[in-house]
Length: 620
Image (cartoon, rainbow, N blue to C red; front, side, top):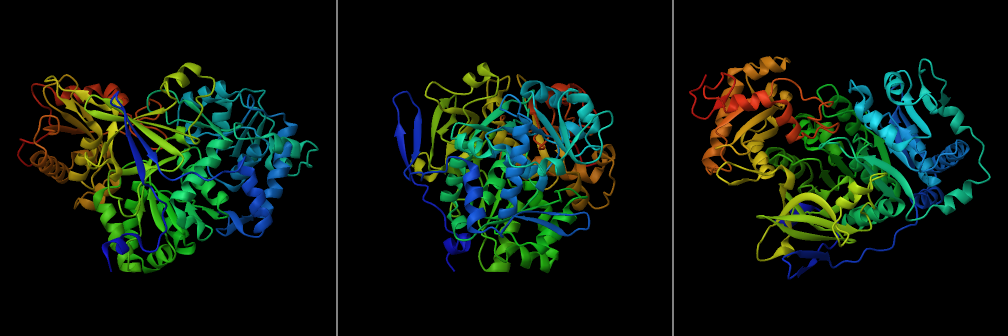
C-alpha cells in the first residue's frame, strides 16, 4: 500500500490549492482557487429539507434516566421546533431580549436553540461552569447585563438555582425541564412545547435572512471578561458549506457523530451540531467527558454507536488511546465506518498522534486521517484546514474556499487575518471592541501568527506560530516565541504536562511554571497514586522525570530564547474566577503570571527554594 493510501484510506477531500499575492507593503494574501457554492438563506431551511426528505431519520439522541437512547427524528424535531418557536414569539423575544441557555448539551437545549433560530431570535448558550463552578458568578452576571435576555432556560432548575438567584433579574422569565427554583415562578419546557402554532410563525421564519443575528457566543474570556460574538444566518450557513466542500466525504453518507463538546463553544455548538443538521446526519449526545470519572460513559457510547467522523480535544484522544489498545470491541466499533478524526483546541501530542495512526492502521489497513485547522469563535469557526496528505502536528493547512487570509509582517512573524462570509460582523453592544478587531480592509485579526511550511513555496501551507500577544523579550532583547516553545516542552516531558506558563520578561533567562496532567502522572510514574496535587508535586520520581525532560529539551534547543533552566510545578488548581483558566480549559498565561507572582519570584531568587527544578540539580 502506498504511503498516500495509508494516510487517507478512501476519504474524499476538497481541493485546497491557492493563489499567492505579494503586495508592495509586505503583506501576502492567500486566496483559495476553489469557489464556494451557494448556501441557504437560513439554517431552518435545512431542517425543513431533511424533515421532508428523511422524516424518520434520527437527528438527536441522548441517554435517558434508564440508560436507553431517547431519539428525536427530523420530522419530530421540526414539529417541536415550530411549537417552541411559537412559545418564544408569545414571550416577545427579540435580539434585544434573546434566549439565554445556562445548562449543557441536551435534546431540549438543541430544540430550543433551533426554535429561536427558526424565528430569527438569537440564543446564547452560556458555559455551565459560569453557573456551577464560579463562586462569584461574575461572568454570568456580565453576560446577563450585556444581553438583557427575555427568557432564561436551565434543564434542571434546582441545579442552577444558585446561579439564577445570583445573576438573573427577578423579572426575567425562567424555564426549566425539571426541578424548582426557590422563590421563582418558572415556565415548564413541556408547556412551551404544547404551545399552539402561532399565526405569525411562518412570517417570522420567512423574515429571517442572511444578516439576521441568530446566536450570541461568549469568547473564552482568556484576556478578561468575555466578548459576545455575533453569529448570523450567513455565517452559520456559509461555514457549513465550507466544511462540506472541504471534507467531501460528508457528502457520501449522512454523518453520525458521538459528541460531548460543549455547545457554549463554537466547535461543538456551531461546527458539530450544524454539521449533523446540514448534512442530514445524527448527533448522539455523549454524556461522557475526558476525565477519570467521565471517560467510561464515552467508551460505552462508542461501543454502541459507530461514528463516521469523530471530534474531540487532544486530552480526549489521549484518554481514548489506552482503551483502544485494550478493548477489541471498542476498536471494531469506532473504526467500522470512521472517515476521519478531527481535533481542535490545542496541539495533539506527538505520542498520541502516532498511537492513533498505529491503532487505526492495524484495525483498518490504513491510517484514518487526523485533521485539524485554524478557526475562532469569530469565524463560525471553520477557516483553515489541513488535508489527509499534509496533516501533522502544528500544521493548520490553507484557507478553505470562501475564506482568504492576509499575512501581515509583525516583527519576525507573520500575523494572520481572515475575510469571508463566515466572519462575524462584530461584538454585541461593543462598537469600540468591534472596530479594533478588524483592519481597514475588513480582515478579522486572529491575534495568531503563522509561518509557511516552505519559505519558497507558500502553496504548501502554514504551521501555527503562536499567539502574538504572548511573545515577549528577554533582558538581552531576544524574542521568546511562546507558542512553539510551550509545545516543545510539553512534548519533551510527555505525557506529564498539560500546559506550560513561561516567565522571563526583561529577565536574563527563561523559567517555566508547569501545569501537570495528574492522570498521566499517576499512570506514568511508578508508585505515584496520590490524588492530592501538592503531594504529587513533591514526588521525587515525578521531579526526576520532569528534570530529564527539560534536559532533553535544553540539549535540542540550547539557545537563550528556547532553553528553560528553571521550572516550578503549580501545586494548586488554576482558578476560573481569577481568569487563570477558561471554562474550556485554556490557560491564560498573563493571568497565571499575575496571580502566581510568588512562584515567579521563587524562580528568580538568589537562593532557589527546594520546590524549584533546576537543570543543574542532582537527582533527588
